[in-house]
Image 1 (tube, each protein chain N blue to C red):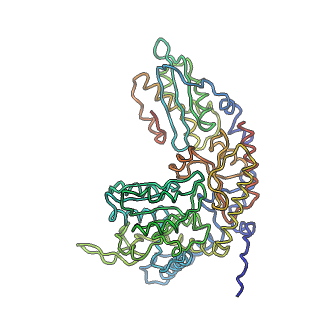
Image 2 (image 1 turned 135 degrees about the vertical axis):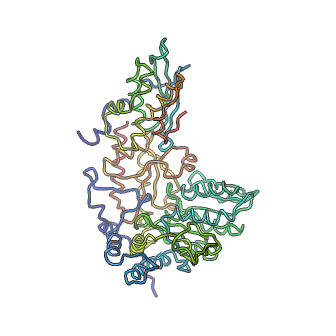
Image 3 (image 1 turned 120 degrees about the vertical axis):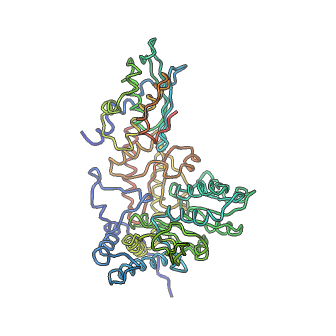
Length: 144
Length: 414
C-alpha cells in the first residue's frame, strides 16, 4: 500500500465526504463543544440516552476542520451507538485509533481524538460525573 | 565610473551548496517552500562551524591562552560582519542573542518596564508575528500602558491613514512593526512609521526577522531605534540572532538577563554593568553559532541582497500567476510588486492540514497553520492558511511541483 493510501484510507475519505450522524440535535441529553485552537478544528457532539439513562440511543455531531478530525468523529458516532455511556466515557483512545487505522503524527493525533475527547466531556456532563484528570493530557484543546 | 549591472541570481547553482537537497522526499525531489519558517544551510556555514569547533574552540573573552584568544577573535569578527551587514554605525550596538524573539523581549523588558505606564500607548500592527506582539501586550499589561493595533486594509497592507486616530487620547511610547509580514509577505513602510513615531517621541522597534534575510537592510536609513533579526532564517544556525539598538538607548537601559560576563564589578552592595554589547550578553555566548551567522552573512552577501530580493519577487509573481489559474484557490495579501517571497493561500473547503499533508506526500514542504499570527487570521476570517515561501535556492520547478500537488489535493478531496 502506498504512503498516500495508508494516510487517507478510502474509509477515512468516505467518512469525511459523507459524515455519519452529522447535524445538530434538538434537546440532547448531553452535549459538548471542542476546539483545537492551533488548527481550528471544531466539533460539537450531541447525545440522547435511552430510558435507562445510560444507553446511547442517538449521537450526532457538527463541526468543521481537517479530514482526520471530521472523519474520526464520524467513525466514532458509528462505534458508540447502542453502547453504555458509562463505558464509552472511559473508552481508551487506542480503540478509536485502531478503527481509524492510519499512522498519525503527534499533530494529527490531536485532530483524530478531538471528537472522542469532546464526547467524553459531553457524557460526563450529561450524567453529572466528574471529568477525569486524564482529559487534561489534551491541554491544547478547548472544551466546553 | 559605470555601475556594473545587477547580476541575476543563479538559484540552481546556489542550490548545489545545500546538502539537504541531495535527498528525495517520499521518493520525489524535495520542493522546500517553507523558508519563512527557517532556511536551509549551505555547506559553507556548516564547514565554518565545524572548523571553529575543530581548531579554535574555547570560552571567549576571559581566557589568556591562545585558543581563547582565537575564539574571541572569531566571535568579534562575526559581530563586525553583522554590523556591516545592517550598516550599523557602531559594532557595540550589535547584541548577540538567541533569536529575534529574544531581541524583542530584551527591548520590551529592559526599556518597557522602566518607561511605560498608565496613559502610554504601545502600538503594534495587525500583521505582527506573535514575536513582536505578545511581548508588548505582556509588558503593556504589566505597566498599565494601553496596547493598541494599527489595522490593515483588505490587501493586508497597513492603514497609515489611521495612525493618528489609533493612538488618539494617549501618549505614544512604542511603535512595533515588522519589516516583512511572515504570513502575507507584505513589505511594511517602516521608514514612514519610524518618522511618524519619532515625531511623537516614541521609540520604534522593527522585527526584521523576515526582512533581513531577503533584502538589503540599512538600519541607519530605516530610522528605527531597535531592529531584531534571527540567524536561522538567514542561512545561519538556530540559536543565534541579534539586536541592533541605538547606543544611547542601550546605554540608558537596565540589563535584561544578568549573570556572568555582563558585569563590570560585582560586590556585596551591588553590581555595575559591563560596557556594550556585553551588558546585554549574560552567560557564555553562542560562539560557534555566531561564527555560523558570520559565514551565513558572507554567503548571502556574496549572492547579493538585491539579487535575492529580485529573485524572490519573480518567484512570488510566478506563483501568484500559477495559483490564479486555479479557481478553487484563494490567495491573500498585496499584489506581487509590493510583496516579498511569501504566498499564503487556501484551497476551497479543504483544511490547510489536509492540503499540507497531501503535498508532503508529493515531496512539497509548505506550512499550514496560523503562522504565529492569530490576530491576522481573525482579520482574514480564516482559522489557518497554507503558506509557500521562497529563498535564494528556490527554483520555479518547486512552484510547479506545488501546483501539480494542489491538483492532487483537489482530486483526493473532491
